[in-house]
Amino acid sequence: MLPLKLIVAEPDRVKAGALKKHIECDVDRIVALDGERKDVVTRLDGLRAESKQAGKKIAQASAEERPALVAAQAEQKQALKALEARSKEIDEEIRELLLLVPNIPAEEVPSGATDEDNVEIKRWGEPRDFDFEPRSHIELGNAHGWLDIERGARLSGSRNYVLRGDLALLEHAVMRFAFDSMVARGFTPLSVPTLVRRETMVGTGYFPGGEDQAYRCDERDDLCLVGTAEVPVTALHQDEILEGADLPMKFVAQSTCYRREAGTYGKDTKGLYRVHQFQKVEQVVIDVADEDRSLAHHEAILGNSEALLQSLQLPYRVVNVCGGDLGQPQVQKFDIETWMPSRESFGETHSASRFHDFQARRLSLRYRDEQGKVHHCHTLNNTVAASTRMLIALVENHQNADGTVSVPEPLRPTMGGRSVIGDPI
RNA sequence: GGAGAGGUGGCGGAGUGGCCGAACGCGCUGGUUUCGAAAACCAGUAGGCCUUCACGGGUCUCGAGGGUUCAAAUCCCUCCCUCUCCGCCA
Image (spheres, protein in one colour):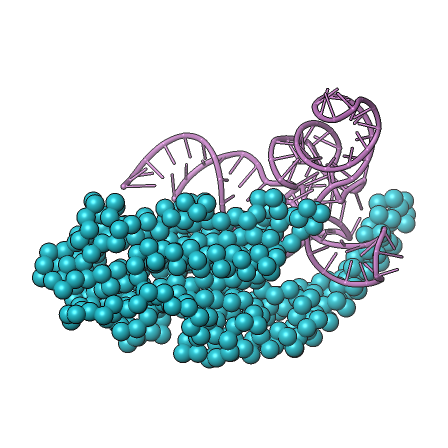
């Protein structure tokens, strides 16, 4: 959420931002409503002041004076009620519109409409030149009995899967390695609910707009399954005023992630690339409202994930996500795309976002600075490792000619010390 | 699921219709004192909105929403949450 004051003061800047993101919103209506709001509030406050004074007089009035004063008050009350109703209407409409106004993208965000327009800014590692016909993770998974998509579908419908044996172990190994490496970097480990209230989804910027992508419980419980631990972790301190001295707060959390993937029928239908449920280790940073510090954190959390991919010997590239591919809340986003041989291309595995105070405003997440002044925090987050896409990359990139798969060094301790999994096919 | 208790400022805890944005204590900040510190003493210490160059002034908020009343933290209704006991249960 952008501050109302900013929208009113610089409507053109806000409109330009929305345009760059290809998102529609009614800035003019907000500006007009705010004008009326100020007028109504001023009159309302005046009326309230009067009736408060009158009330005090009644309390001190004699029995004879009282009836006349009370009658006069009752009349005043009508005007007050009408104004109060209007004031409330305005506030609600503003709030609704405000939730739809996108955050202003940074200068450095490239213009463009879709992910085709994202700009590659870095590449690490060389996609392997196989001297045999590489197999896809599906072929490898089937051959080793590691992957059971049919039974996954029978249990839970399409885009669900069962991991078995060493692939189930490998999933744990990557998650554990990702988690541990973040803890080693000083991030506070967290285990959080994956079922959250609607307000938490609104607070982090997923709602309104993303309802189709989230699973929700029925009306008995107004709860949603999160698509990422970013939601409960960023919202952990919602409605609080933190002490500036306690910032930055850096968290790492592993959670199951649920995604409906509505509107993706026919897209990536095979294998583990696009599924309804997976495991993810996520990093979240909450800090003071300082542009430079935000930028530094952004670089740092991107670097953390790059370090993980490098240690797993997985080639990747980093793209600067263009305006049209940016979500409503982000100021800027860098995606890491890891090489996936079966796709013969890079596939998105990480997404590093910075939000400035956009989420913090919605969440009412604030802190007190040294002068005692209260501000909204800045928030950021990035994937450390998403289970299924990491498994695709690991298995496909590290496969051998005989169908076995080499285990990168950092994962061996959690794989029983083995450097290779799978029998020759 | 059944029965009961309760939600007040950073914390503890008063307050049952007007003098209450809220006693008192703790904590925190500043000052006095001290070589320095502790103790003691004095003062300050919620957030939003409107208004003001500023000082300030006004208004809203005592879990949330609605109602009664000239007037609500206080009375009534609905909802949410927390705790205790019973039942069920990973």
